[in-house]
Image 1 (cartoon, one colour):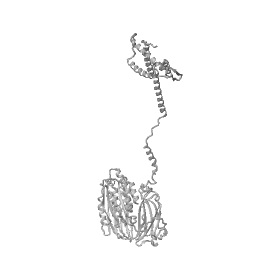
Image 2 (tube, helix red, strand yellow):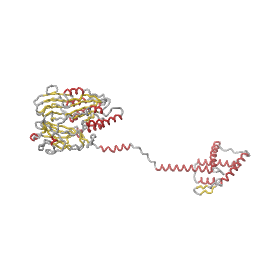
Image 3 (cartoon, helix red, strand yellow):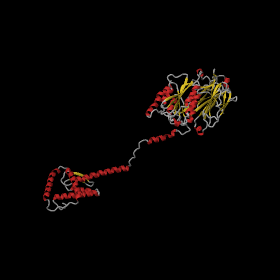
Image 4 (cartoon, helix red, strand yellow):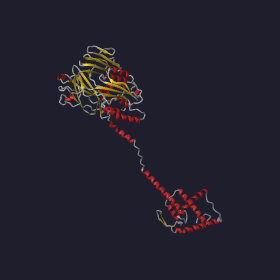
Length: 621
């Protein structure tokens, strides 16, 4: 068996002393155990209306080698085993193709956690002879209840309990999102934590290609270069499988052998198995004739020819995920049934070429052109390496996105090819960032800050200074007016009263004033009437004067500042109060209402005084 190995250690081409002997004796890859977990929730009716999950699964099952094991689970609210987990055989493939037609979209929820647990049912006793891969296909988020809190708790359980079980068992988990509404951060974390592939199929039409690329990661197989619809079969090849994708409108696929024999779907032969769908043909031939084969069809991208041979190209497993500007060391070699080939004469015949293409570059997407080639190098230009190991350093991953690494060995009479897909990410655990050729996300930061600022409470507008001064001035004037009116009422009620008695007198005067205004002018009295009442009132006044005369001696003089002269030693019982008040009033203008109120009060006081002095005619004393 001839094997070409890719070693991830720094090696200079042609120098063998950098490889310890134990690194040269590499073990053959383990057999593959593939477990597919497919979402059948109701939302799939929208995201996969043509149910393209069926043909994608059929293709995957048909490509699996008989040395592998596989099983299929479907999930919605509950998890069901669609295809039993068994050793792959022709019988198993026939059963898998039949069961694939039962894939539907009638599930109520999206129970991702339980589906992963069912697929990892044997995690306590994993089979060491197999490398186990779980492929999860979903279009949604964790959804096991109508209560968002329960769904969030289940999501945390998947990350904190289910994922560690998968990691500790050595399983690799690959995720495919069939919708932009899927929980991509969760799917990314599940894949990256187990060194798996996280891919997005933006439409159901992309699903088959995504499935195929992940299959290449789970069960890598040697290929024959397919150039211009031709491939070269050598004597070491025991079997080849041609996967031919057809362009729309392409005629039926036919294979022409080097001896001119034609193979087609309708023709049944013992050495050929032909599986056909409306998208592709899958043809397997045993003991094919040596020489150049021709494919008669309008071939679409992703077509390939895989082989079973005793002359092999081996590549030591490369990572599925690398980070921006990370450097990889590529090393490879050929091997046959006796071990690594180091024969210089044989190696001298080899042309070993490596290339890297960026599949989703902005240039390729804008122009709908072929993938952008970012690196190519002939690794066999120097003297053949003594240990048979060809090496190169890959320092080409300067943009986030999907890349395809291809190694082609041309031995003149034989050809071999291996392909490896990898995802370049800028930050560990996160989806690929926006490429450099596109607007930088930093430009949007001011928008975020502006939005955040709008969310803050609005600051009240400051009151203008002139309005503030006007309010304060108006308040002061109001206080002065109230004080002035109180002073007038207290100081202008009459003679020989104490302060407390004056206050009561003011209240009485105001009440009598209201009554007088309602009854119109006061009626004059006739001479000689009410003589006893007049004498009684006079006697009452004399008594009151006698009582207050003593108390007046104890009242200290009050000083009042008028602005022109100080009113000192003012006797409250004298007429000077009224004269001083009138003098003060002249210094400060009053409103018409104030003047009217003052006249009414003066008239009332004059009438009361006339009554007390016995002047019935109303003449002033």
